[in-house]
Each structure stands twice: as structure tokens, then as C-alpha cells.
Length: 288
Image (cartoon, rainbow, N blue to C red; front, side, top):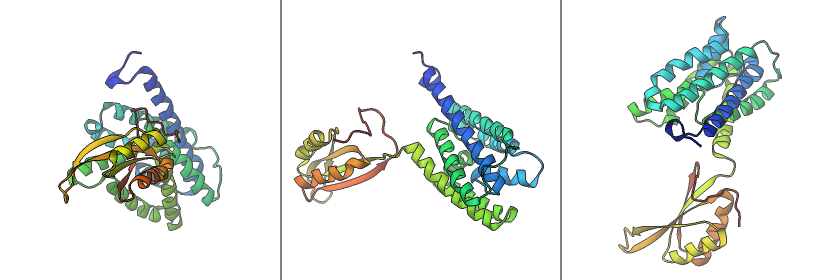
């Protein structure tokens, strides 16, 4: 199959288009049918847009577009053409969806249900969009730019933005709404992580032991996972040794620890979270 810009095939672009569309529509549904009718806001530009739409006669869909686009233009060179186009498309679909649903009756007037279901749908929609190469919020883009200037973590900058937005929401609506909005944002963030990273998280494991060959072979034989040797030198002992590096699923981690400790009880084991794994024949679903 012929490749297009930056190596993406036509099928990959089509899949990206479909899932960004679904994610953007889901966010529009969450906003117009659950959150906005109950005076609950999202974080980021969506939260700012909801407050502006509440204070002025202009519709939410228009604000979602006109407030996001300047940030997208500002960060165009930093985030790349493909991401920028995907993000612009997602923002347009989200804005159109909210405009079409503006006069549709809300699914529920019970705020707790609106928080739960609105947060779940919102998080799933944003997560799908991010997973397939786009974004629905200009705050993420401007946070990347600020991070490079101030050397602050992007997540910390986004959190500061959202804290300010939720405080302002307390004055624009009422403090109950601001607190409900914080819970909605928390639910959405958790679901975004699940959608982007998957339920079955992967773990990278580094093992230091004098029995590295036996441990490595046991992992291969009993877990079916490949291992990599990394040459190392002890800082205290000054002795040369080999570290074992491998990636396993979360469900396999306990079994791996048991294998290592059955061979060398004093082995050093370091476990880290892995956001994504591609290639190398790795399959998250294989449990041996």
C-alpha cells in the first residue's frame, strides 16, 4: 500500500479520521447533553468556552472553535503538521456537534449522574482522539510551549491552568458547580489514561543478579518473554556484570518476581510503568 506524508498509509489515515471523529462527537455529546445543562464545566479551553457561552449570547460551539484555533496556530511549528491538522479537524467536529445538539434536551437533570456519565463519555472521547494522534484542547499545546520556556512539566502547567479555571467557574456559576466540575475532570482524566494506555498496562523490569543467564532463560521458558542483556559495572564492587531487561504485562509481573527470587533471593528488581509497547513480537494478552 502506498505511503502518504510521514509514512502514514491510506488505511492508517482513514482509521485516524474515523476514531478522531468518534472521539470528537463523544466530547460534544458529553458537553451538551450532560455537563452544560447542569452548569458543570470541563477543564481547559472547553471550560473557558462554557463560561463565555454562559455570559454571552454566542453559542458554545463557536467559542470552542475560536478560542482553540489561536493556540493551534501559535503551536503549529512545535507540534507538527500532522498533529495540527488532526487537532483542527477534531475541534471542528466537536464544535459542529455541540451546535447541532444545543437545543436537544439533556439526558438527566441529576447532577451526580451528569458528573459520572458526562465524565466517562468525555474521557473516552478525548482519550480516543489523543490515542489516534489529535487533541481537543489548546491548553495542552500552549502548555508544551510554556514548558520549553520555563522548564516546568507539561502536566503541572495544565493543572495550574485548570485550577484557575475551576476557581473562576465558582464565581460564574456557583461553588457547588465548580466542585462537581472538579470531580468530572478527575473522572475524565482517569478514563483518558485507560483509553490511551489500555487496561492491561505493561511494565519494564530491570534485574541485576550474578545468575543472569539462568534467570534470563527461565523468563524465556516460563513466561515466553524475550530478554535483553545490558552490560554494567558495579559502582561499589567495581565488578562487571549483566543486567536483564524485559517487558511484561501487569498480570505477569508477580510471576516474573517469583521466578527471579526462586533462582536468586538477593536479586535486585526494578519495575517501571510503560505507556505503550510496539513491535518485537510483544503481545499484552499472552499469559503463560
